[in-house]
Structures are given as C-alpha cells and as structure tokens.
Length: 454
Picture (cartoon, one colour):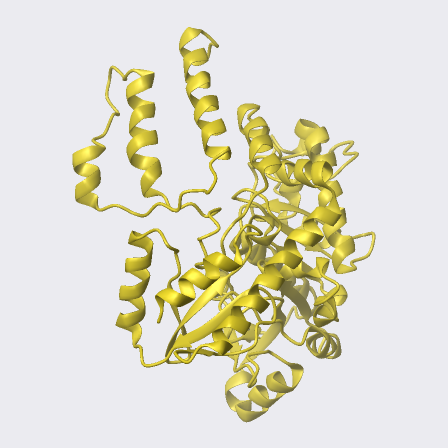
C-alpha cells in the first residue's frame, strides 16, 4: 500500500486520465442526486477483507458515484453559493494532495506557510488591514467565525474579569447561520437585530433594538458585533462604517463576515459599499466561493494576529518545539484547529499564474450577470424582483406561486439539467435566488431559466 509499484502506477493513470477528462469537460455536467435504493442496487459496498481490482473500484466511482454529485462548478449551478475554481487551482490541488502537504507549523512547512502568507497579506491589503494583521486558511466560514469570535470573547474577558453576566454577540437577522452555531458552541447568546427596510444592519437599528428591550438586554455582556459583507440569502452589505463606530464607542470587537461577499472588494464599482471594513478586528472570506479556489478554503485574518495566537496556540510537551526559534508563523496558532492541509496553496498558484487583474475581471463578470438577470426579470409580467442586487445574488418571486410550486419547478429543472436553483425564504415569503459566482454563466443560460418560469 505504501510502495509506488505497478498497482500504484495503474491507479495514477486511471486518476490522471479521468482528471484530464473532467477538467476538459465543456460544458461541465450538472448531474443530480440519486436515491438510497439506487445506490443499494448500483453501488454495493466494495469494502472487504480481500480488496478489489483497481478497475472495479474506479468504475464504481466514475460511472455511478460521480454522476450523483452536483457539480458546484457548473455554470448552471446557481443555488446556495456556488464554487467556480480556476483550472490552475484545481490542478495544483492535486499537487497539495499528492504531496500530503502538512500545513501545521513553520517548522514542518515553512515553504507552504511562506506562500500562504503571501495570499493572506494580499487579502489583508484588499481589506485595508495594517501590517500587523495576519491569520491562516481554514476549512470554511463556520470555522473562521468560530475562531474569530473565540478571540473576541477572550479579549473581552481580560477587561471584564468580575462580570457574572451572560456573554452575547450582536448580529443582523440576516447573518449567516454559523453565527448562531458558533454561539451555541461557545455557550453564549446571540442578539439578532432586525435589519432595516433594505435588509441591512446599521448602528441605528442596533441602538433601536437595545433601547426597546432594556430589561432583557441588560442581563448580557455584549463582547462582539458581527457585520456581514454580502449576506448569503440576499447578497446585502451591512452598514459597516456605522457599525464600526458603534463597536469603537462601546469598546467591543468588530468581526466582519465576508465569506461570500469579500471578493467584491476587487470591483471599483461596488468597493465603496464596504466603507469601514478596514476597521475590523477580524475578517473572514471564503476563496472557495467567489475567489475561484477549490473547496475547502477560507481565510481568517486578525487586525492583531498576536491576540489570536495567544488564544489558539495549543500547548503540549510534544508541541513546544514548534514555538522555539520560530522565524515565521504557525497557521495552527490562528484558528481552532491543529492538523491541516496547506489549503491556501491552490489559490496562491492560481493568483500567481493568472494575475490579480484576471480575478478582478472575473468578479466583475458575476456582478454584470446579476445586473443582467435583474433587468430581464423586471421586463417580465410573471416575475417580481424582491430587491435590486447589491452584489451577485438576485432574489425574485414567481407571481402566484407558493413553496410547493417553487420546489416542484426546482426539482423538474434539475432533472432536465437546465439548472440547480432552489427556493429560499425571506421572512414568511418563498422566493427564488440566483447566486452568480461562475464567470461562465451566460446570458443565454439566464434567459433559458427565466423562460422556464413562464
């Protein structure tokens, strides 16, 4: 199993051949999920004492399993927040995996950490964070939010050593679900402030909510406020500047969740909407969403990385050596993790190959596509745009439809391989939403989808 012999060579040839086939697929197949009964019949377990031939195992994956996995990089994948990794990033991910590149510490992986930190610095510069800023790559936004808010909590505890109040996080009612999950893990409360008529969180709406329920909220110590730069459901950017003013005035941590929308900082047309983001104490963005990296890749960055390392650096007799004579950073010190693959390298490789301007153009393409879709929706008599798109998410209604109608249509379109678009809820209203992150989603695809709703 651990020797590169004829068997390993045959495995490699199968994998490389299929990878080339997959990478060159044009258009990329959307595919669709299968039933449990289908898998019981067509993909019985191959795990046994004796093992199986390479051909039998790979055949099951290629001809049965892979076709049941929706391709997140298909230009017809518009549900949730799709992923559209560049070819260079996907190819280099093979290098990371084949090399089993560990990215825990400087001592073990100084070269990998050096390159990952170049990308972290590039992102920090986009945000406008100072030279002391730093962080690492984690698996996703949930891990990034948890890691950031744990640091926020520990900084607050330094200042409030005698308080017996329950800790709480402020955020919008449009904030990502991971904020609530994070609070549950941390055993603290979430104060979900109603967003304004534009679905944005503002300092004014925070003050209004707290003043309306003084008895309820006085029982809490608020240690952090989360502003969202690109809400998942609607693609809205909170009023970060006013929230930063509120956080500064009340001496609490400002965390900006830009998991989806952070890529918009590359566009001169929408960058002004992020005003105040440079004042964040911590920030996350998921390159596997709209910065064209493979899953799973999220960046968490702190204004002062040393505050994070104080909290997250793990201590043990067998780990002490990692912190002696350390010339660079240990990624394991900046988030709630230890073992990790060097998941930032595919993004580094792709950025280095294609250049920042290519990324800028690709992000703008998604913004332009959202504008086109919104314009076409407004031209129809049977669709109604919920709000004008801020970034690359477009939310709209099919007039006269209920949840079941949306669900039936969604299932039918996926079966026909027209698109993967699923219904969502805004308040108590069912809606449809397009999330554009793939530069290869065309006007023709959008027109085809809209016509299917007639």
